[in-house]
Structure formats: structure tokens, C-alpha cells
Length: 412
Image 1: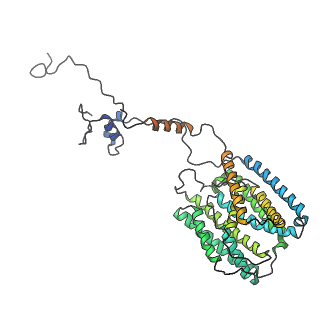
Image 2: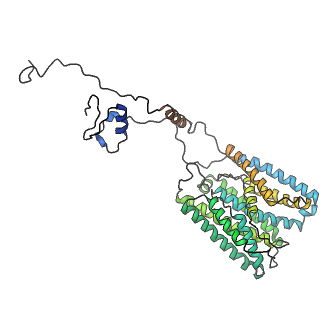
Image 3: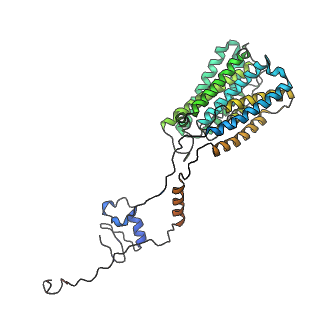
């Protein structure tokens, strides 16, 4: 390939460049050049250091969670001691049965919230769904437990699947879609102009230990399974690690669908327990205070607001502590609004999330740092105005054997 002394042109290309640097940039990134480019112009791009990982491997330091859970256990013990001093009968049957049913209902809400948090698809409709299920049971409880319970669970499950389809098909944040769903449920709730008296005579306190034991089993079993790295990675595939707008694969859809489905079913079950043990009518409201309490408990228990990360006993201890506190503040006549309790729990839970995210992942020295440093240095030093290196071919020495000496070009 030959070049003019002042202009630069590829064979078959009528475009000329007078600036060597501009020509080099143009031909280097021209995909139509093929093999006609001078390979000396193609300087290979090399990088040093490790590339940043596109996905996290799901490994977490559970010791951080266990340490925090010990503190939650101590807090629950202190509140229990205060409750015992205030009224010892509250921790004895039949008062204990009522306390256990309340704990099971709150625990189901917290499990639903924590499950969706781990899966990266937080469902903000759990509280409204629970209140709607409570009103449905209050209106239909006289038809029998099965007739009042099953339709509510089926409708809640269908709502969870619909929510999952919207989130995955449109690839939108789950908290936004679930908030829209919660507003729709609130419309259904507020169609009732007055509180609804609970119909039926089913008393869940007769199975209080069984109900609370079921919650404990679900909480611990789910947490132990979530501690297994492959399961943890599978459940937390929706956790954003790069661009949150990037669509995830089909494998990420499975845990998202299951989380949203079970969260709505848990919420409906919690609503039935709340209505069945209620001593008074169920008042129409928004249910958002129970959403706040559910997510506050999940966060306080060590479940990360970013998804995937969580402990073993954190949700159980947090639910126990708050259940005891609700009974204690009722006996003391403190009259603390549920919204205020929810706000405090969420605020404390966010602090726990920051703690878990800061110290909950194993630190690998130098991972991605060399690449970032090299990229930053290159970006900082590059400037379009700086001259680029252009290697001009050396001028060949004049030859002594001149072919133009003589009439026929023969050297003499």
C-alpha cells in the first residue's frame, strides 16, 4: 500500500485524510475495510488486571447475620421480661395462645415480605391483601372455614401470578407494580362503608402452638435452604449487580414467580388469622401499616433490601420481639400507632441492611481494582487534541545501480 506524502488513502477509497491521526482512527474502526487495511495501523488493544465480575457468586458471610441475630434474641428476651413483669398472665395460657396466633399472623406477613426481598421482587401489597382477606373471612366465616378460606387463597394466588407476569413481561420494578396492585386492593376494601362483624365461630387459639410452630418451621427451613450458595444464587437472580434495566434469563423468572405467589398466599392466611381471633369488627382501612411492619421485620431480621442476603433466625426473633412489644404497649396503654411502629422498624431495618451489605460479603483483595485503575488512567489521559504517534517509513538510501543510465535502461 502506498500513500501520498500529504494525503492518506486506502486502495478503492476516494476519501482522503490530511491528518495521520484522523486517518488512523477512521481506518481502525471501519468494519468494511476487511483485509485491505495495513495491519501496521491496527494496534492490538491489551488490558491488564482482572475484569470486574458481571455476576456475584452468592457467597455471603453468615457470621455477620448470626451475630446480629444474637442481639435480636437478647432484645426479645428483654421485652418478654418486661411483659412478664407487667402481666405474668400474658405469657400463660390462655393469654399465651392469643399471643402465639398474633405472632403466627405477623410472622406470615414477614415471611412473605422477606421472601420477595430475597428474590429481588418486593411485594408492597402484602398488607392490603391481608386486610382484604380478613374482611372476606369476616363476611363469609359463617359458611365454614373451608368455604371462607379457599376462595380468598385462590384469589390471592391468582393476584400474585398476575403481578409476576406484569413484572417479568414488562420488566418493571416489582415494588412499583405491587404498589399499583395494593392500590387496587384498597379500592376493594373501601367499598365497605362500615366495619364488618366477624361471622363464624372458628377460634384459632385452639391450635395456637400448631400455627406458630408452622411459622417457625417455614422460617427456619426457608432460611437454611437460602444459606446454601446454589439456592441463594438461584433465589437472588433478580438482585441488580450491573444495569438494573438488563433483562434476566428464564432462570431468574422462576424464583420471582414463586416468591410473589407465596407472598400473596401467606398474606391471605395472615388476614384470616387476624380476623378469626379478633374480638371486634374488622374496620376498612388501607393495610399499608401492615405492609410497613412486614417489610420492617424482614429488614430488621437481616434480609437485605437489595435482595438475596439473609440470615437464619433473624425473622423469627424479630417477629417474636415485635409481637411481645405490641402486647406490652397495649397493657401499658401507650397507644402507639401501627404506622409509627412500621416507620421505626423500616428505619432500623435499613440500618441493618447497610451493615449486612458492608460486611456480609467476602472481600477479595484486588478483584477488579487493576482493571478499574487502568481504565480510569486511560480515560483521564486520553484527549482528542493530543498528537498520536505516526511512524513515517524511513527514507531509503539512494541506490548506486541506476537503471536509467543508458538508452535501454541497462546499467553500464
